[in-house]
Amino acid sequence: MGESRPPAHRTLAERAYEQLRDLIISAQLAPGQLIDEERMIERLGIGRTPLREAMRRLRAEGLLDIYPHRGTFVPEVTVRDLRQISEARRVLEGYAAARAAQSKSDAFRQDLIAAYEELQTIDDTDAERLLDIDARMHEAIYRAMDNRYIESTLKQYFTLSQRMWNYVLPRLQVMKPHVDEHLELLQAVIDQDVEKAERLAISHVMNFEKAVLAAL
Image (cartoon, rainbow, N blue to C red; front, side):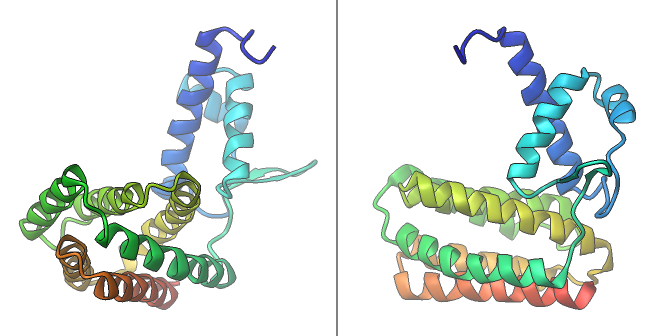
């Protein structure tokens, strides 16, 4: 029965989800902002049904709050959420990095080496490029675990963290320490130094939490 919907309908819902998700993560839709359905339908060029499907999916991922009789809002960025997300990430990111450092996959190692080499060339004022490499680095580490359940959970927490980071990014003055952290973590995983990779991954999350907290 679930396959009876026309493919085009699913495509519109998926497109609405991806576009709205990007607007939220990039902080183009600011924390606390009300989602005006009529304006969003016009902005995304889709209908009400796919938009609402997308919003329900984003609510399940913690990227929207839906209140009966009030509307749909982008969640506020709060210290409580920051601390709880970071607490979960410290455990899972450390585990993921340790597992990744044990990987024997040549394809995975090549992905990390490519990210390491690209990161060395980055201008530490190029925040957008750094964020892109950061996401690809984490995704490569998650894939190396070969555990789709933990990978899915980590991706959700990472997405929530990205939104917080983008929100405070204009108030962050120096990016180089964050670049250096990524280089150290990548090198530890590439070198298959399990203990160091785990320690640096945990430290990376702790430093993220401190930076966001200071900027809030």
